[in-house]
Length: 299
Image (cartoon, rainbow, N blue to C red; front, top):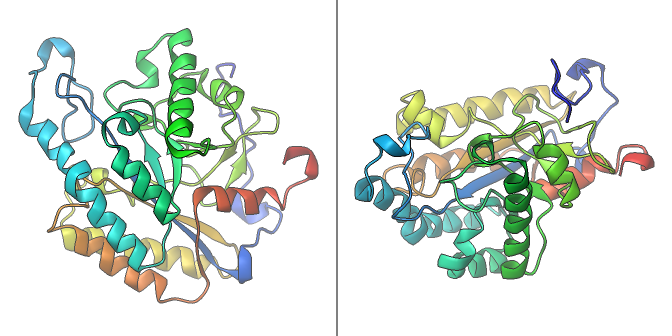
């Protein structure tokens, strides 16, 4: 992508677009995105705001921060799997490919549950913006190749660690066969990028209905996070009667997978799924349905 003042996408207000529909006339397409991440004990750990800490100022090993995140892979992910399964939700998990090497049991169970796995860097300890061009391209391909080898399915979706991109990221993702990207949190519907052949699709994601910003940046309580999810849904559901929307819920096993927080997600999903006209889908299912309504030249 050539550096530019506006993104590689057309600006079309949501009120002036061709009509988009979801299966069965659903108002809201709901997808849940657990971020399953790996950090080495010898890595520089991010702070609670998911911000990078300069190595010269870091403490290694940072047992406290590392162990909290490891809890997510030892305990929290299994708690999330139980809750999502109970609500009939097959997640689209953003996966660090190093999880395939260190925690293959998670990959096995995700496959059994019919979850989709999308690329999320090799580890969250190293972001694409911290690499040069050649390293970035290689890291993207290595991530996708490793997940495919472990799961038997090549990922078609991508969420960057920290939602970080360079001017080259979308081009490298398209080259690697990625079809949709979740980094661009600027819409309630999918849209086409002006990059790739066929073009990449942006799938609505959220840093609002996302447990890390909610709990650590907004300082929301567990009760407030549940209320945020309900209010987000209520607005999208009302608006979706005339213009269908996408609602993404992003959770981290080490955050929402904690015993005192899991109830917020459980209760919110019970509320959301009690409404008619909610399509519980994977990210790729949403994108495929969107593409089916586009001209054949961009599918």
